[in-house]
Every structure is written in C-alpha cells, then in structure tokens.
Image (cartoon, rainbow, N blue to C red; front, side):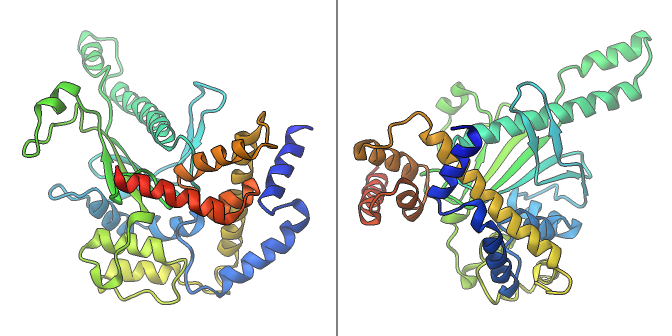
Length: 347
C-alpha cells in the first residue's frame, strides 16, 4: 500500500473519502453561509478580522499586556518563511506585522491540535528570528557599506545583535495543564530563577524573544464578565463562529471588526469557500496525523488501542474523535478521559 492509499485509509477512519468530498463541501458551505459571522478560528476569517491596522494595534496592545510604550501603528509584512536548514522546514505565518519601533510579530491562529506544539512554536520562532536577523544585517550593511575601518567596526559591533521578534499563538485546543488561558514564554537563567521568589520575578536573558500562548478552551468568560480589550478580543475570536449575535463592545475598533466579519452572502462567497477549504484541509491534516500515529503499529490489539487512546486524550483530542478514529466504544473512551481529567485535578 503506497502513502496515498494509506492516507485514504486513515481519512476513511475519520469518515472522510474523496467520494464524499464534494457533498461535504456543499454541506459546509451551506452551514457557513447561514451563520451570522465568519468563524475567525479558521485562517480566512482570522485574517479578515485582524489584518486591519486599527484592529491589529488594539489587539497587540491588549495581548502583549503593555502598560507603557503602546504600539501606535503596524505594517503588514510578507508571511512566507523559507529556511532550508532541513527538508521539512518551510514555514508560513498567518499574520506578520511590524510595529513603528521595529518589533516584528508573528500572530498564529491554530485550530488543529498539534503534536509537539511547543517544539513547533520554538521552531517557527527560530526561523522567524533568522529571517529578521538577515534583514537587520542588510540594513546595517546599507548604512555602513564600505571597507573603511569605521564601517567595518560598526558592522562587527552588531554581528550578533538580534531584532525583536515575538510570536502570538491563539490555540483552539488544550495547550497544557497549567489551568490558565494565558501564558508567556521567555528564556531564563536557571540561577536567576532559583534566586527569585514571588516578589522578585527574574528578568529574562533577553527581552527580544517572547512567546504569547493563549488557550481558547480555558477562556470561559461570559459577555458580562469582559473587563478589558484582551477579554473582548478573545471573546470575539472564540465565539464569532458559533454565535448568532455578538454583544456590542462599545469600542469603535472592536465594533468595526464585528462588522467586517459579518457575512454578506453577495460579497463573501469566495471567503466562505476558502473557509470550507480550510476546514477540509484540517481534516486531511488529521488524517495524516492518524496515519503517522498508526504506521507500523499492530492495530488488532485492543490493549494497544487503549494506550493510543490515552496518548491522544492527554494531547487534548476530544473523546468523540478518539473513539471514532480508533473504533473504540465511546463510553469506554469517555471513562478514560474522565480518569485522566481526575488525575490532572489531583496533581
């Protein structure tokens, strides 16, 4: 069996096949067309929502928890990253914005639960950093181009200088077990962390590299509980695709964003088709993950299947999907999920 046949088999396990793709496309298109808003947890709607300067400035100032030095303007940059360090590393960002102060920010919306998510985020940030370092070096060389001792010295002084690169990951799946919807990652010195205490948070090794990770599954605030712009943006992102009526935010930027993602059947046929294609693409990625997960394994033993089920549940996959994929009784998988949840609560 070749790879295409294996993929087809994996997708059939998910209830998908080339034969039903056309009817499924039509079914999804009808579903999305009847919605009030675009589902901004999918790439087309996410870009319609945030690839707007006023919206991006508001969103970034909220999500970066800035108390001073607020972002005033952004420029949208290219989203392709090509780093040929390995055959697999060819990454594409959802939204790449550059602020007036030179801060480069990669904003990602992740609908699909990823294996090795932490490594994926680090890998993409590393590639992003290398691309921006190359651009910084080009600017330095443009300013100091000659072989004069002065220009050479200026270039050498900044040989290892890195630009500011931040990554914001909005995840529609359980990222970790910390219990909070918002987390930020930095590079810290072990010694500094050991010397610190609750009243003296250690400074990171550098402020130029930072990750913001938002777990939408853990963001559970209701409309009446929204207190600030971060709350309002995350509420909008999480609920636009499932609500028929979003609340008034009484903020011109946010209310304009709601108008921008409100579906107009005459205007939005193409973006609705893109939204359907995005959903089908996610299903195919799930099929590939299933294929990778089972390739070379003995699927005939229930014991092995339940071990696989536990691994998938611990990664945040819903019990219904795990039961369908592994062809196990839903009741048994739900019992296993409850056991895992109880263990996490006790720990």
